[in-house]
Amino acid sequence: MSTTQETTTTINLTDAAAAKVAELVKQEGNPELALRVAVRPGGCSGYSYEMFFDSEFAADDLVSQFGDVRVVVDPSSLPLIVGATLDFKDGLQGAGFSINNPNAQRSCGCGSSFS
Image (cartoon, one colour):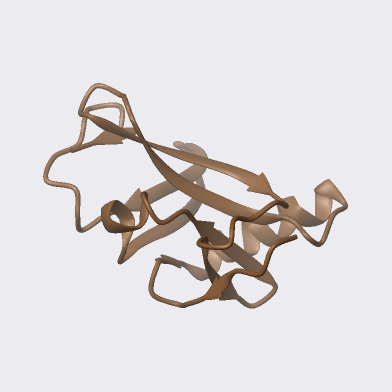
């Protein structure tokens, strides 16, 4: 594993999101995993979010720590999601993660892409 820069200004996690990510990492059985949040070209509005567990980091990745949970963001995604908040809701309408991104000028109806 490469050395990464530590920061707390990339993306925020609500308590519910941090708890759910910690639970999922525990289920994976690898405490070295971090949640990677990225933005990729695509989707109906121009960009789409990508989230997955990762244990390999580049030297220029930015890492935020939320208790036992680490969130990793690559430098090219950072300007598009800095200041965003990742939340997790579990209710009658279904369960899932959502991102509230102040950098998004518009988003699509499916909620998975933005511009």
